[in-house]
Length: 276
Image (cartoon, rainbow, N blue to C red):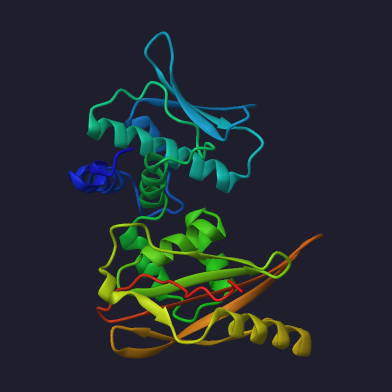
């Protein structure tokens, strides 16, 4: 989709519509009742054996049907359903009929797909409730992340992506594949805070990875500590935790952290250090 899509205010209206819809249901009970939201759009949900995770179709009688892949986990099904509802909201606000939407996470992951993901996060994890829940976990840990993901019925990755979007929260996650020497970082969706308020890190990721591996090898436990960071002219220490994911052919070190602040916003990013 064209970048004008977000520039002309459609994204803001779609988010506003998503929040308004979310407020119409009983939000005192979590996880959010997505089937109730689907019914608000006149949609019927059907689990079936399909290759893609989900898609929307319009039947001959005009009924709108959301098909979800039967074999996926409950949390994946919930995100797929929320994503497809996001497409409906999105198309409704750009005036295009939602008769045949792109499959969830198609190979060509278009800008529209990313926006639908953003709306899905708003449906699954309403920001006001999510922010209040996050305040109960000021110290980052894998257990804290699991607890929050369980409350909202989402995956750990979806939950952390939402943490990164929380206003006035400095949050980052960084993963380094030891075997392939490749790295990736999770960042805030475009259109967040200005460049001047981005979070940068004062230590290279290689030093953090080495420290995590040394600690795990020496103690048999995962590292927890602080990551030195800077935002504007302010030096900070962001509490963080590590995971070492060992597979048949690779080992990945992932370092994640968050810090709730009083009015300071940022996006997290790491300086690359594995080019050589």
